[in-house]
Length: 112
Image (cartoon, rainbow, N blue to C red; front, side):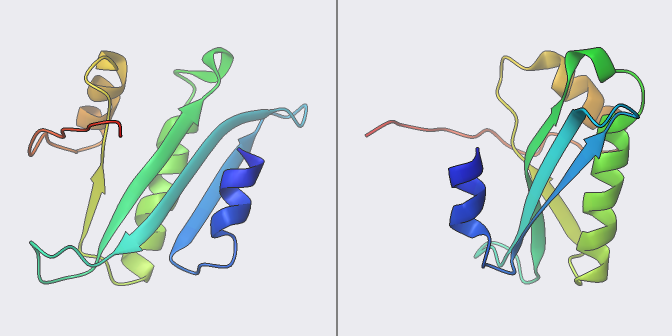
């Protein structure tokens, strides 16, 4: 993870946030970036990572991280936000729906 974050550290389009427990333990992480999609006329923000420690789930950590991401998106002028989620992550889909996200398509991938 450190190498991945270092790779985008100097790119102002990327941001990341962490959530700590009172003990100082990292219990959540989120990352996002800005992009100009070719299919849309305005800037968008994409949530590219959202992870909450199993021990912290259901305590508002993920919601707080999403709120921070969404607030930064608005501050930077993005009128919409996007996220991808694996088809197998059904709990994440429920979480995203509760936060107001709607499924808008299907993502395909191919390893090369």
